[in-house]
Length: 168
Image (cartoon, rainbow, N blue to C red; front, side, top):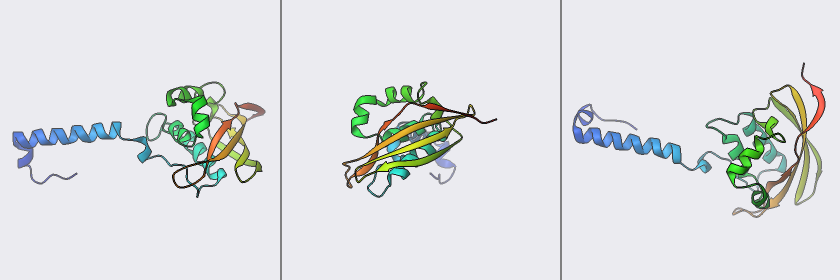
């Protein structure tokens, strides 16, 4: 946004307009749809790419705002998964809980394909948590109907299992 000349700010009507514009801009930024910044399911994305998007988002969970990573994971939750784990507020509590909390702001991850068919895929994900421990998850995805065509979406992630490894 640019302003042309200082007279518009000194004039009471110009000041009122400026305050209104700034108020609307700030309100829009706070209330604006998260979809503007979230990656969405798409037929072009591979199952591995969907997991990578989710893990990358969780590794920096609170950027650009609190729980943005969890919102990104939610964007790729299969509709059946959403029915079980939703709404988003409940899903957020679950991800911050003991079974999944080590995914929040984790340090690194490895993804290994276990099996994949035309409509389902299962991967093992090993995460190095910020506590220095390694945890294993099973990530299951299925293709789901989307406006652009069938897209990979997460149907289930098993709760964390400690591997017994610890970063020194």
